[in-house]
Amino acid sequence: MRNSQPDPRTSGQLRVDLGDRSYDIHVSPGLLARADDLIAASAGPGPRFIVTHPTVDRLHGGALREGMGSSPCQTLHVPSGERQKSVRRAAALWGALLAAGADRGAVLIAFGGGVIGDLAGFVAATYMRGVPFVQVPTTLLAQVDSSVGGKVAVNIPGAKNLVGAFYQPRLVLADPTLLKTLRARDYRAGLGEVVKHGAIADADLFSWLEANTRPLARRHPPAISHVVRRSCAIKADVVRADERESGLRAILNFGHTVGHALETTAGYGVLRHGEAVAIGMVAAARIAGLLGTCPPHVADRLVALLDALRLPTRIAHMPLSRILSAMRSDKKTLRGIPRFVLPREIGVVQPGCEVPAHIVETALLQLGAST
Ligand SMILES: NC(=O)c1ccc[n+]([C@@H]2O[C@H](COP(=O)([O-])OP(=O)(O)OC[C@H]3O[C@@H](n4cnc5c(N)ncnc54)[C@H](O)[C@@H]3O)[C@@H](O)[C@H]2O)c1
Ligand SMILES: [Zn+2]
View 1 (cartoon, rainbow, N blue to C red):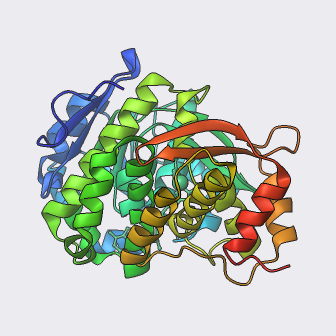
View 2 (view 1 turned 180 degrees about the vertical axis):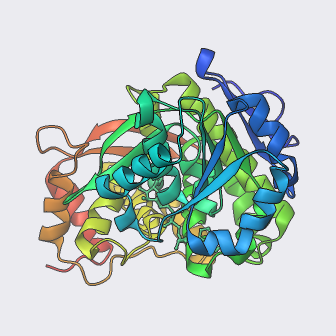
């Protein structure tokens, strides 16, 4: 994969090259102070609509509005929680935009975690067949993952992210200082996706994480900036090579085949997404170990790193049969046969792997699934 320009290790600015859908990702502390100019330059001069949760607004909305200067701006509140990623909530936002007289020049600003990003992005993709939108992610998961790549969606009963689009933002503004107020569990869950990025594409990042678990646990701003930049650079490279997930982009699903099944089995909200992905990555590494396609030290290093970051690595209180049936009914499953992204070594994975059922069962039982 090509490296993003300029060098993402040192620069706070990256570009996702997608022809006329290209956009910049800015990662730096205090960035919101420059929001007005950055948004005007990338999304146009139209009236701005900030979509956010009341809590995020209370904590950080002032800084964002201050950064917007005198530009016209309204705030639309959405309660917290995965349930808000719904057609009903999207319809309420379409209605609020219409009532406010928003036309095709209106700029939607997603100011929150992945729930707000996916929901506001979906509304932006559909309102008047598409209005510009800007991601200002406020959770670690959103800064390292969901705000980049243009997947937007809502859930329908029984099917997460089933209704959506590929719709790229015009700009991503990631300010690591916003993460100071995040609940500890939400912060840690975001680290799960950072570990994933190292495991799929960047052995140096993985080693860096192994050596820096303490500054990360303390939310040391330079440590957070580093992982957000590296993660965005990796995701930008993958998305550039395969915007609509027809091939390479599937590597981003490392840990997600089992992870999604665990989220469904536990009941949404019980396991954080990043926690489920952490266990799912260990499962994939154990499966690859059982198949003999990956040395055992890969799973051992994953477990040690995830343990040090206080992320779960074992399945607790979940029957094997329910996990397997959730995996078969996942929307990414072809003809009821789950596909896995399997590690070959740290930093290299193989997508699209079919795995014999008895191997999957053995790995899940080894990880603690009950019979
Ligand atoms: N589009 C994609 O590519 C993609 C990728 C991964 C995940 N996702 C989606 O992301 C969602 C999960 O996102 P999430 O983990 O960010 O959860 P979230 O958006 O629900 O945010 C978690 C909690 O943190 C609070 N919060 C947000 N920012 C805060 C801050 N700075 N300080 C204090 N509290 C804050 C929120 O109010 C919420 O209660 C899921 O719906 C998932 O499907 C999408
Ligand atoms: Zn994920």
